[in-house]
Length: 484
Image 1 (cartoon, rainbow, N blue to C red):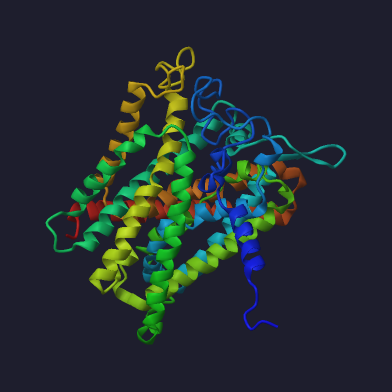
Image 2 (tube, rainbow, N blue to C red):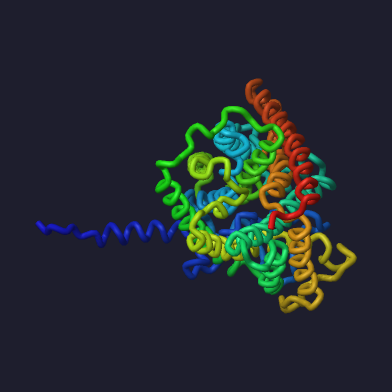
């Protein structure tokens, strides 16, 4: 018997399984639309469609056509790939601010990270449940395909799409702004004694984002998104290992049981914002080979997210305690280590920007650039599928807009809390439960009805408190300026 076992077959099998779970576009796949979870199952049915009168998209032959009716059998994804998409949505860059939430919320912030994960998992399930209706024979039939189609049923065909897409547009553009703000915060942390201030760093990073205006499809966007996530996992492991190396100095007694009511709602908004994935779930479930595995996939992805986020936030605060900053990497004591981590985070932020940017541009295109008789403005796409000059100008203006907004409101954690308190609460808490009650009232138990109402109440409470405290903090931060 050989002393060293033959691991070749096991390694090959492990690689095959990992390869199957990765986005096809990263491994020479042909259809990047499969891994952009917003895309539905019918032509023109995207989570970003619906404001135009026909719900249509670009001219025939233009880049970025959607999947056909139901797609081919090879277009379906399994629960591992679906879980990858959900994890990609809720394990983003914004976890670098989770220790900051523990600073103001103590153990209650950790409870909130777990509780919000449970609620968002529940609302994701009931949102998908709203896609189905029961036949007289007791069979469930999928009669809707997207968040927008549910909103049309509940809010009416005229206002449903406008309301949901308005919230999505705010969420997408604010996410773009957050990436620019984060770049400025990280770079000024890399060079605290430098001559370039935070706003200048934001403008310099914004110049690097101008080429995003040339994006015509999701192929390169999805590839960049995958590698961004891989890089972020490596960075998180490095920070986690550093925190563990400081375990002897952890401030166990510094974690509070009381809540800072003035600042904790900001942290709560950050937590809610970090779990927002409901926009993607209807079309994601519709593209699964076995939709019956959807709830199991959603459970495990949120369990993993809750465990990682609560542990990361807790250990990060134990390490730096009262000195914990809005972006945790700025707490790293070694300047060289901080510069290394911040550099890769800046690269990740810049590479993450194209995904929400592209989605926001597509929503705006479908709203204002359909061409007559649907909109006043002409299409930005030529008949051969190429981007017209007016289209390029429009897309560059969107980039410039996000840069200007980042410079005007340059406070990452406070801004993220403000957004989470508005769109995050609406998309993740209030609307899914309202839709569930409206569409399924007769078939729900009294306990389920009561729980849905309780989640709506929590959403309203979190939203109002977060809007007030975040707005007040933004006004105060704007008044006193940046801490250069």
